[in-house]
Image 1: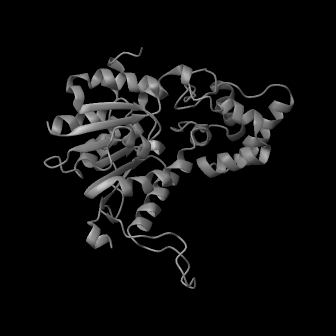
Image 2 (image 1 turned 180 degrees about the vertical axis):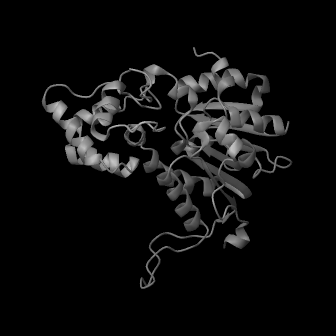
Length: 322
């Protein structure tokens, strides 16, 4: 079992900014939809002795750490091993129909990145896995690269990683595969991408960063399930309840922005369409006109926070929503 000291080293991103949207004086139940190692949950439980936190996470190892860290709060904390996409059924199983707040921090945790065997980081030579839930039985990143066509790999790397050299990288991956040397480890992939892109002297970001990001998103279907999750939050929140979501790349932030707009009643259909087809419905009030980003001191102390963006919305009263 992982040890709790790993949790103490983790820095929760935009902690004060995200918790500032919740009313802890009146909140009874808040869902931490991406529990991780429990940093945000711990801060919420410390804010009020009345609040109960339901923590969801698909990573069993991280869940064990969070349980250790938050055991002192007794039955005010409940941990559930599940993906945030299943938030509705998870709450239903607990007999909970609505909640006062929902928080989601979509970033990969330091614990996951720093666990060599998980295959998330090119800093360690390890099997190319990248599954948030390694017991899920889903395909690993290595299996993706063995099974997808060159065009599918290129589209994946460009679409989820915004990597301009995606076609050259995909071509090299498939060439290795045809030579009987499929890419199966983090080091093999990192070196392959670096050989395609090269590396400039003094460059801070490793050339394989965007490719690794793209594979992680694809393996865990991160963008695929996000819109549905936001839809669920709009239904599960009590009137006046708040959903706050922290993203770490432009694709996720764009989905959150567009879903919040749609759920605030702003139609995105072309003006000539006689009937709205985007599904715009007035359920939420957007609380962040622009995303909140980390202050310089947080970014300096925690480089992984630099790309974080926070957006929040409040559930409208039924009479106003109608």
